[in-house]
Structures are given as structure tokens and as C-alpha cells.
Image (cartoon, rainbow, N blue to C red; front, side):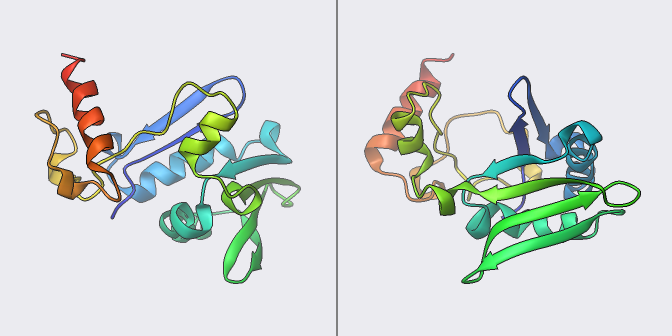
Length: 165
């Protein structure tokens, strides 16, 4: 599985980065880091859902090779609790990537329900996506390409897409 997109919300504005806009995953991540590693973001915490078991697997090698930074990880039982990224000419600035699932072990759908967030995390056909079909237009792919999705959720997803035409 490859990285397809990366988004963040800074409390005021959401930013999204899509692989289709870049020549490589490395370029996408470099652009994200260029936007995040700025003086005005110093000492900010960035909470990433399940980063130890998912997101950091895709990001870490690119973050580690980004020029001019120092990484200070806090690891417990083989999981990243915190990854401090220090930057600036004397490494005087930093941001912290925290695995919020380790801090608050709630799945995204339940998290949205508990905190009355209307926009729920949707299902996604991760096994379907390939570089050749990033701009796919067509019917919803078969259930087999969705990971851990019930038939009921899949049918609701298909119905939502049918209603958007």
C-alpha cells in the first residue's frame, strides 16, 4: 500500500496534499514538511490517529531523510508515543507527532460519535487503488477491495455515491 494523500487541520484551515499532484511520495511529504516545519508552528502537537501502526510506517523513512531536522522519538513497547521533530538553524524549533490512538484508544468512527462530530471517517477501497487508476471514474469497486467493511456499510457507501450523481 502506498501513501495517497495527507491532510491536516491547524485549528483554522485544513490542508490536503494528493499524490496525483506530485511526482513521488517523497515530493508530497517534503511539501507537507515544508508547510509544517515553520517557526509559527513551534511547540505544536500534531495528533495522528494510529500513527504507530499505520501512518508512521509510510512517513518515517521520508521524515528521517528530510534535510535539516533532528528526530527525538519516545517509543514504548515498539510503538511511537511521540516523535519530536526539531528544526531551525540551531534546532531551536520543534513540533511533536503524537499517536492519539495510544492516548485515547477509540476508533475514528466512535471518536466522531463521542465528540458529536458530524463528518465521520468513511470506508475506502484501499486494495483497489493503484498508481494507474488514481483518477478512476466509474462505479464503486466490489466489496472485496474494501478492508474490514461489513456488507451493510458497503451497501450504504454505494448508496451514498449513487445519490451524488
